[in-house]
Amino acid sequence: MWDAAGELDDLESALHLTRLLKPALISSKGSVVFVNSMTIRHSQRSFGPYKMAKAALLAMAQSLSTELGPEGVRVNSIAPGYIWADNVKYYFKLLAKQRGVSPEDVYAETAAHIDLRKLPEPDEVADTIVFLASDLARAVTGQCLDVNGGERHH
Image (cartoon, rainbow, N blue to C red; front, top):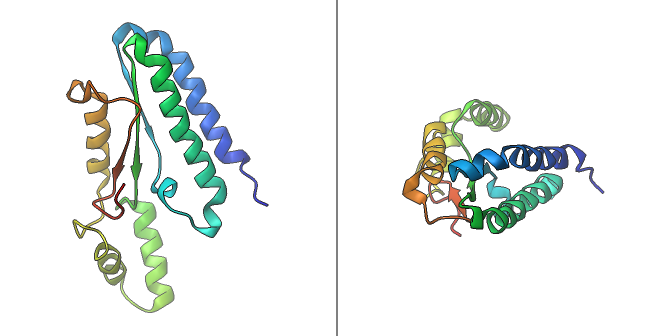
């Protein structure tokens, strides 16, 4: 059995912060966007606690949408897959070393299974958050938008 205490602490922190900001969110007709993970869409043996916490974050976003929607507050989340940032670059270097190939080869193999044939960059993920927080998404609440370049479809 695994220990999910750390992941649940993150969930509790997100809820606590949203509660603290509730008056400001209501007065400004604001928006909350939680960053979730593609782990809610698939299972891997070692990801149990992380997936459980992220599934709870998704449920929390939907519940908060129902709770805060009548006050004009929207609550959504995004579920990114791989993000081409330092931690994934490090991971790909590690995989490349283990397999005796280049990090570029690992990237190409991974990207070959993504519809857009590239891993999303951090600014592309951030742009999605900005969209969901903006008035352009004023009729969107309780949703989780996958940001993965087509790695998985939902």
